Image (cartoon, rainbow, N blue to C red):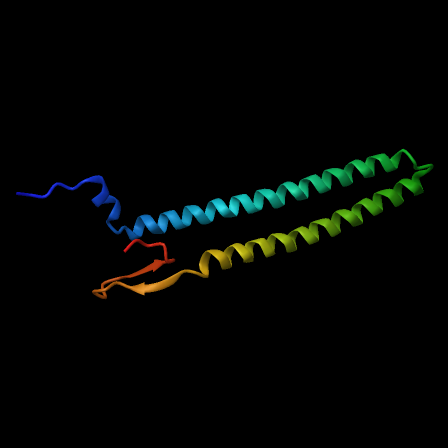
Length: 123
């Protein structure tokens, strides 16, 4: 008589493809969260700087004062965007290292193929 397979037996079956997809989805979620936090912080900072720039125009007496305010705003804008590029590069590097560092290449037991695992594969 054939043995019936129950849900517990199916959950215990190894599935390296599913494990790979899960690892990828977890990495993608982590990246989206990190970039969302960084992006929101940057946009908030720039909106605040833009508001201060507009307020500074109320204190300008002539076109030279306005040009000075505009130049200061432009200098801050350039500095902020340059720093943001560096932060995004750092975020990308950190996410890459945390995602790929635990990954190791393992050969298939019969030598037929090679698979990528990150330690989360089920036995």
